[in-house]
Length: 293
Image 1: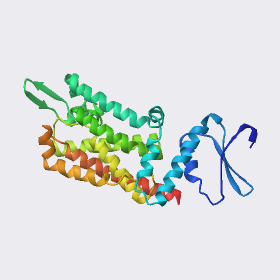
Image 2: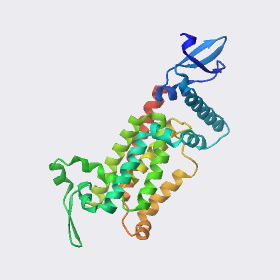
Image 3: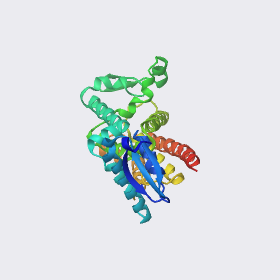
Image 4: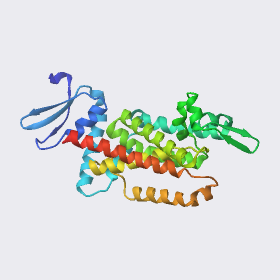
């Protein structure tokens, strides 16, 4: 390696584990080399312009390790994904950003173009005055309208609905996209959305439902189980989050929330998303732990 064309970033003692730093640099597509010299480990990068980004990555990881040693419960992971600027977040978390954007578009369609909504529900419907007549999902699928299996997840009925779901997708989704990549998060979102929508239709039959809450619970279940199998500061949930979300799930099942908001709550979608997220967390967590062993 020609030292003239590379930039020295940091030196580490030989017993320091650099695996996590290297993993994050690989994810960010940063070319680097680890070189041993005089008993020390030297981290070099090919592009000097990327030095600031690399230093941020190192700072996040070192802070996470320090807080883990002190017994911090999840704060380090939150700081790691929140340390980026908004512009950098758009670049590093494209799947999270696109998912939230689609949710906002769905909310606008419901609010301002309700005549379009029937194209995005799980099954088609027809409005005749105050009455609504639903078709069946089978009929829609026979016509090749397979997008209906996913699109209900992006329909939102009110500002509170999209704000609540959007904030949780932002908080939970970035953790997965940071540590596992955009392609991985996309698979998790699509799978949990599909399972949540099918669960809601199976439970309630033809009805008007939508929202990313099933995906939110899917992300929650994924992080919960994956971190149990393969603990990591980024996937560790902040204190109280899991308990609050499970409590909210139960409260919604009582019908109180639906009564207060003046509408129904897709409880089956929440439960279905949670179950599928837990299964995905178990599968990916198991294989990730096996590969890192």
